[in-house]
Image 1 (cartoon, rainbow, N blue to C red):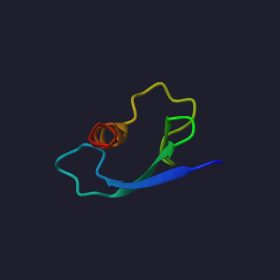
Image 2: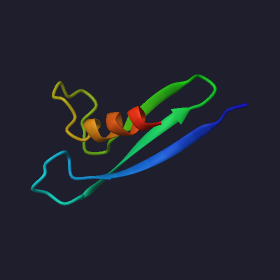
Image 3: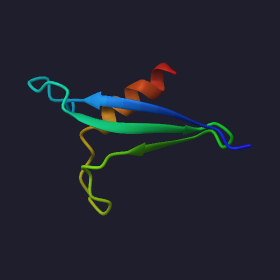
Image 4: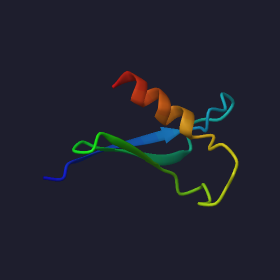
Length: 63
């Protein structure tokens, strides 16, 4: 049985001067114990670190 848990995240991109302004999605695939992070602002082939990823990593560390 497939089970996904969705964690919507409202973030400012780790810029303390900005208020939260962008939604991303963290997904836990329970059966496979696999996390996936989705960010519509990040190009798929980008080599730059995703500035919104740190918020997702913090959330995973709490769970």
